[in-house]
Amino acid sequence: MSKRLPNREQAIQLLKENNTPPQVISHCLAVTKFALQLTEKLRQKVLEIDSELVEIGALLHDLGRSKTHTVDHAVVGGQIAESLGLPESVVNIIKRHVGAGITATEAQEFGWPKDTYMPQSIEEKIVCYADKRIDRGKVALIENEIRRLQNDRKSEAAERVRKLHEEITSLLGKEL
Image (tube, rainbow, N blue to C red; front, side):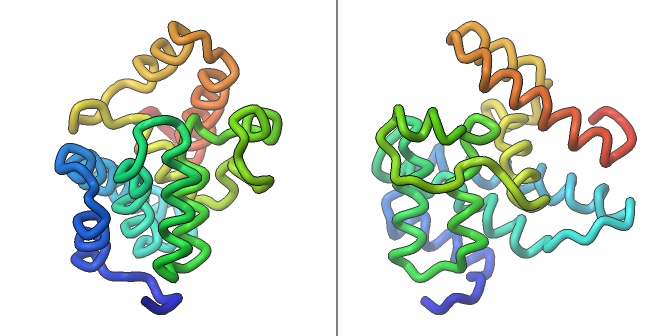
């Protein structure tokens, strides 16, 4: 594959070819739908957002779940995407979507390669945020994800999710 973005059908095919479980593909489709809704609302605020990148990044964000269901799926997915020749912009969405980002200290504790695992671009933030809002195929309250992280004693991740929510809603000018 070239360094061009695959289209929607090609992205779904990549998930299938890499033996991504059907329930994960369903989740990716739900995240994509919500991410594109967010993108459209944000673009109405005159923000420049690459909606194709959001779509393909959201479809492929859990590519690594074809190999592992741990937090490591972000790194594994990024490696798979790189091996498939996908653009760096897609690889970054995959690597940076977990936990509203992973700090350098956390990445080191996980034994991950030295890299940036915090979402940087608006497209990365949209996919990351949409992923946090989808639960069992439906859009859920962000408070549910924050509470889950707090209950799992992941207070720093919960705080990052809260801050990401505040950033996205401030850009929108309203709550979702």
